Image (cartoon, rainbow, N blue to C red):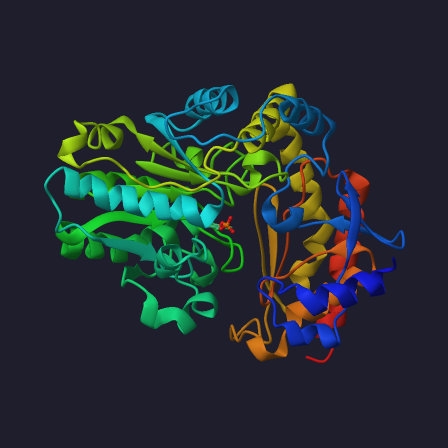
Length: 450
Ligand SMILES: *Cc1c(COP(=O)(O)O)cnc(C)c1O
């Protein structure tokens, strides 16, 4: 079977995610036959460098031998069992390790099978906590503009990105949206820290006005990923932690995209030295092999649910595949790989190479900004940099970069006008060189008509 055959059959029956299917009348699908390390390969032997870690999931390359071996071994023992009334070794060991690794104070693990569900769990848990402690009037959430927390209705409601949200507005609960500390909007010459702290006044005011009716503030620590890898200073989180405690509001850290070393520390919260009350993890949790998500909670939250059954305080939330043993085994294998060497030190070097590779673009007339946090590097394109005029979304400049890169054997998938790298940690310096060349050409190609 050729690429064309698989594409045709896919288009006839598969409704692809986050896609206007009509685009595929012109834009070929890429059928992937196999993958290894940072490379994907189609049915005709053409290879693509997976520069975005297959939607930010992959950490150590595709089919990492250690994860493959652990998964095979687990498959010989136990495939799946329900997690209510039953337990199993992978979920116990994984929970112990996650609590040891996570910011201090997170002592309980509740599992789901995708990031959006982990966010739903966090929102419901926070709301339910306040009910259980006699404050049912706390039933709203504070979220940041430009945030993304997933696609299910609760997670979508606390998201702040219009592209995904606006259509479903009539179905959504109404959170309190606060302007973002996103440093792309800082004044010329203003330091990141100053801008993020200046933006904190909006959060402080929202908390002052609404704390009595608010369960939690939910944020993506340091990088608002889906909004275009928009970044802010750790000082904001520190201030936020302090204010949440002062106002009696939970802090939910959605580390689904930034967790597991993407920002240069195991969890992005570590840059601020803070512990959230609830933390959501998914994506990199299994090294990019199987769907799994977890919401970690503090002992104080857990205890508010712990009572006689008749008290009606239990968290009666579940998903069929909660804590799936295979996925937990993959997650354990992933954590073992983290223990094999100092990946963060290695990533600092790789991150530096990524920066050097594209730094000449900082002088490009249509590059508004290059920003980086650890292994995430983003290039923001604009029509007019001085006047800060973005390219209209309808021009789909990012799509042109995508198509150009595909031709050259690189998988990039820009977010609107933002081209970014978020590669697996096993990318080589030579592969970073290829990536940088393709991106520079791609940006030139995409912006040559102004
Ligand atoms: C991807 C993502 C989600 C949603 O996770 P899914 O597994 O796609 O449902 C939530 N929050 C953040 C920050 C994400 O990047």
